[in-house]
Image (cartoon, rainbow, N blue to C red):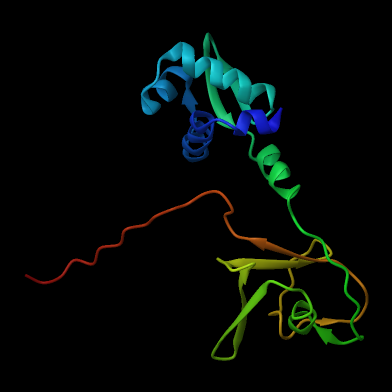
Length: 167
C-alpha cells in the first residue's frame, strides 16, 4: 500500500507540498495544476496508506502529512551494524569501524559529514539520548546502540539573507 502511494509523481509532489503547509483538496489541486476529482483520487490513496491525515472543519477537510508514518517508512531502509570495541573507545573510533561513514575535522571539532557519500548534517544518539559531548570525546563504557540521523531528511528550507548596504 505504501509503495503504491509513493509510486506516483503526483502523490509525491502532493506530499512535498503538504510537508510545507496544510491544504484543502481544492487548494492542492490548484497548486499542482490538476482537477479536484483527480486530486481527490490521489488523496484517497495517500490516506489509505496512512500518509495523510484529514481534519474536518464543518464540511471542509484540511489535509496534512502524517510525518510519523512517513519517517517510519523511511526507517525501514536503515542499515544496522554490530561492532565490538574496547571499554573507553570513543564513538568516533567506533564509527570508523563502520563502512560508509565519512568524518570531517574542522579545527578541534569532529563531525559526521556523510553516510555512503551522501553529505549532510548528522546527529547521533546513544541509547535514544542526545549526548552532550562530541563524538570524539564520548567514551563507550558499556554496550549500547548508536543511532546516526540525518537532519531534516525530507524537508528542504531555503533562506535568502540580504544585508542592506549604504548607497
